[in-house]
Amino acid sequence: MPEEVLFETEQRRSRGDIASYLRTVADKLDAGEPLTLSAGDQSVTLDVPAQPTFEVKAERETPSSGGSGELSVEFELEWDEGTADGGDTNGELSIE
Image (cartoon, rainbow, N blue to C red; front, side, top):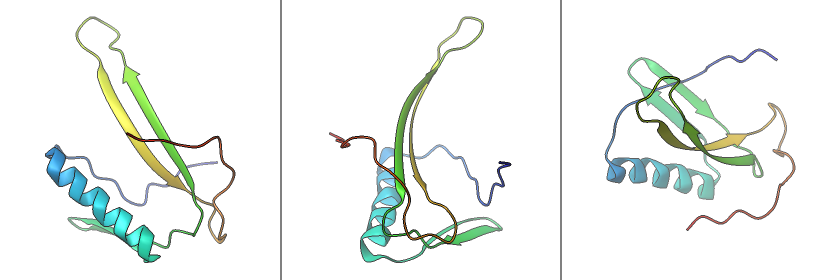
């Protein structure tokens, strides 16, 4: 299925700034409120269902020719449009 990017931004931020963004997302999820993302002239509002699929991924990207690689951690919420449920589970997640 083709992918349509509704919103995208990438900026270097301090850990404190990132934690603040994540706290805002957590507060919106706890309250059951829509999540609005905006940067510049881009904006999208999403109604996250009560049980979306939550994906956590840690990756190491190795360069093809010498140099150092890149590490990343990704947090993703997924759900089918028009449904109230995000899908199945794959074991209990623990983040420490």
